[in-house]
Length: 396
Image 1 (cartoon, helix red, strand yellow):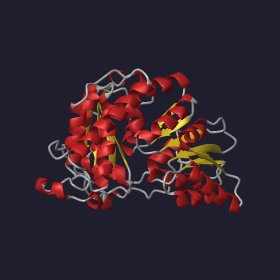
Image 2 (cartoon, rainbow, N blue to C red):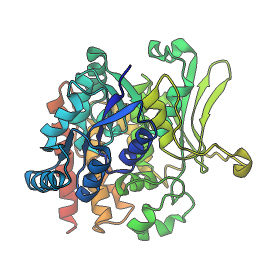
Image 3 (tube, rainbow, N blue to C red):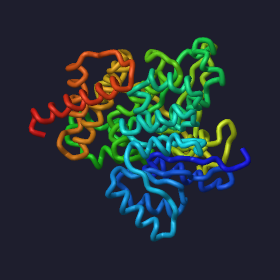
């Protein structure tokens, strides 16, 4: 491509968005920011617009749009401000766009990510919830449109790098026995079980290896994040839940592994920095400098592995059950988790009650077929209602 690739970054003010913009800025000859979106950090979005001069910016509501538009004009920028989900879908599917970084957290990212897929874009998928909620529909859209789907989660990006290029033929056809999905174990990997009820949001957000947003940090602490990644891996790599094994690896240096039938196990290693998978996906099938320091194996000195304790991490068990049930179960799992994590961060519930809410929601509603996007959102809405009822019954 003779001109720079034009990139839309959905969720530009989050950790993935900022890392993406860091990599882009290192290669101005290759990449150009086309559009940015932000949700609540509007002053940060303004600063990013001044720095990257996108054609468009998207904010959640009209009041914020008016304020940001005035500030951009005062700064002498021609950036046009759009509003809400419609604006997100517009910047994700615009004809000028070559690639979309889908980094909006949670169910809110589904429609704009799907819009990018349906427009046949190169989609850098950091929003795992899009696949968790609507896996079959999402992958059908990828095949129908010819979109290029590249995983950004460090684990899925590692698996992608360790699989042969023809893995779409089926894991068995290319000699893959299983996928080994690594997990750090988070901040509570060794916390005495009787102390978990008193942990705080601040403790849950203090990840030992990664710098992430608050919601995903809590998911990492509960290992729900790994459960969602298990479901995502099944869709990305056409795997059964039984073919994906979670391995706790506290150092977060091996990002995932692929086990082949001949006894070979391929692993992808690197420092725990999201700029590595972002740079890989941005430049694929080439390689570019990400700004990440070389891995110093002598400084690391050791690599440890252990099986996950599902008594300590019940969210992982619930996610695997949802993966096996399929249909509406993963969407309900995700929605219940979003409600529960928000309540925990607001100090309305204790940390162990996150799993309690999710389990009650999944037990309280029958799994139904999901053949269209409206059914996905219906399952999402119903799960949020049930989670809200759990909170109301307990005066939370």
